Image (cartoon, rainbow, N blue to C red; front, side, top):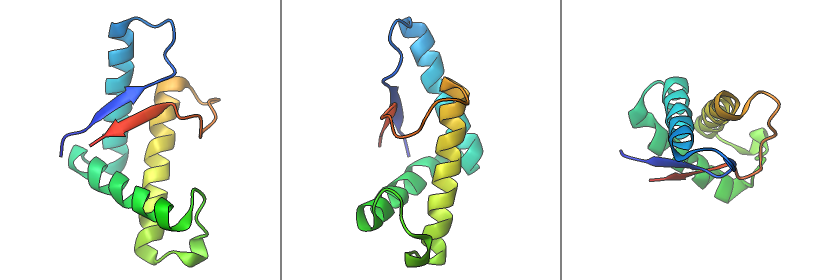
Length: 100
């Protein structure tokens, strides 16, 4: 499935540098999840879990499969944000958008 990434915390950066950062973000997501074809289905499953259980779902309330999806997405997201914005960047700032 095709998807795009839009970064929102790139003030003052050239368009070329922003595009390169968006590509780096995608590459790290894909590498972290194992393949580009897994990004959209894992992301969509994660969004369904968050819609049902909240932003910080209680692991005890999730099925084994849901826990695995949450863990996979959060690890991939953290790796991508760190690769683009650095290890000291806090999560939850709405730094990116994935469009499927």
